[in-house]
Image 1 (cartoon, helix red, strand yellow):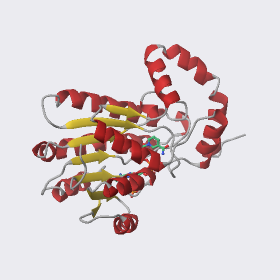
Image 2 (cartoon, rainbow, N blue to C red):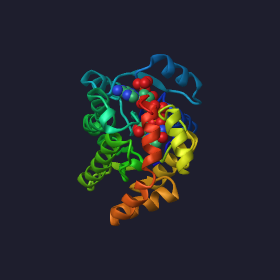
Image 3 (spheres, helix red, strand yellow):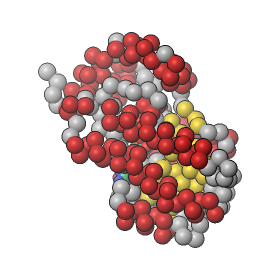
Image 4 (cartoon, protein in one colour):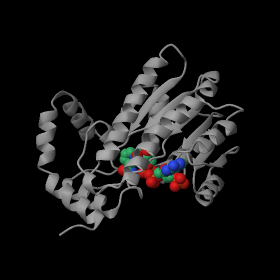
Length: 265
Ligand SMILES: NC(=O)c1ccc[n+]([C@@H]2O[C@H](COP(=O)([O-])OP(=O)(O)OC[C@H]3O[C@@H](n4cnc5c(N)ncnc54)[C@H](OP(=O)(O)O)[C@@H]3O)[C@@H](O)[C@H]2O)c1
């Protein structure tokens, strides 16, 4: 997809990855509709972007009103929806509250499905596209990420099903799976865990570059990180091997998860 003069809805625009994506897309000549709940952060971002015609939309995408506001804002036309908003609550399942698990599934899975459905007629009219921002944990279930992995596996399944449902339409459906990224989504315990386990962390700017690579390639998906890609394939074919490898890391993951809950002994 060429990006110059395209209108792009970006959810989670004022977050770590969202800001980097917005900056990169604006440099490529796109007009952005920046969606989020924090007006001040959206306004500051909007003012920093190069180019013209960017706008912000304060909306909670987990509510019908929020999604309706996005659709209204796009009535004049939209070329691309990037479902980037997301949340994670790192921790052991038994320590997660109903609210944390519900929010994880609502923001990461249900809201993007509903927003995509609602914007689809407008996207069809422009032969547009959809990019769902998943995660490496959408292909590898990881301890400490039960709700998050469930939400991103579901998002990946949704992306695949929709791509096949729209196979005879011009609408392009793509999936971007970052590995760990240096944003405020990851508390210090996750950073410490990744350091101890030797898991690489990318910058938001690297994710934004890969978003552009994905869009320009027209490929169905881009999974970031060679080791993560290898493990995702291994997990699909021989999950027992990945079970064994991750079991060796469980004590580190559990220690950091308990530190997050403040239950470390
Ligand atoms: N960071 C990582 O390690 C990592 C790795 C792989 C994939 N990802 C994925 O990348 C995406 C962006 O993550 P990030 O690291 O940039 O996280 P982040 O810095 O925490 O940003 C997340 C954004 O989502 C928005 N959001 C949350 N709930 C929302 C709601 N109900 N309605 C509208 N917006 C909402 C927040 O905006 P407001 O607070 O303004 O509403 C926030 O700007 C997520 O889908 C995440 O799962 C992240």
